[in-house]
Length: 177
Image (tube, rainbow, N blue to C red; front, side, top):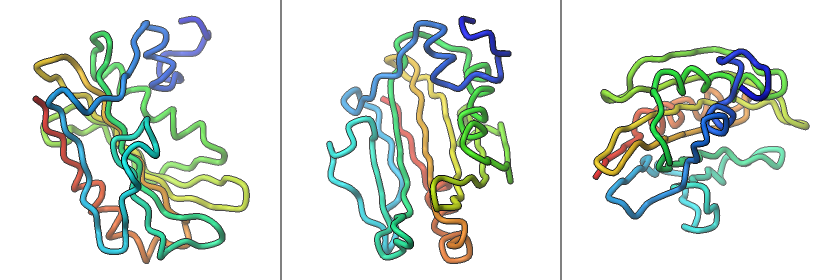
């Protein structure tokens, strides 16, 4: 490793870089990813966030200049990875956020696919944020894919948006061509 860090101290991106692998956003190879659009949430126009497959916002819950959001990214890996080895780095991404505190961590498969899930809180500028992030590695006919879903709200909205956050996470769908 070029950065001298212990393997699980690397982020997913650092791991991929060290192995010469890119995650290329894709939506044209028979793969499809989505999360449900819940009442009060709206989908941002395609192309507004080119790195994301889908972005949802809950504008009616905007508070102190922050809008709750769900960002779904999906890409084809340019090389093969051992899924569990890559997913061991998923927790580091969140843990590098300012003041991050874990509330839940899981390496349990998601719908039969290798997955890593983390839920916690952190602070950015004037906001105390609650976030969930799930990474999933999928083996498809045309190669391996990495999917990431991150849902972020203000910690003060936990009671109001808990059900939405759970439904977004559980409603993640991946179909592989």
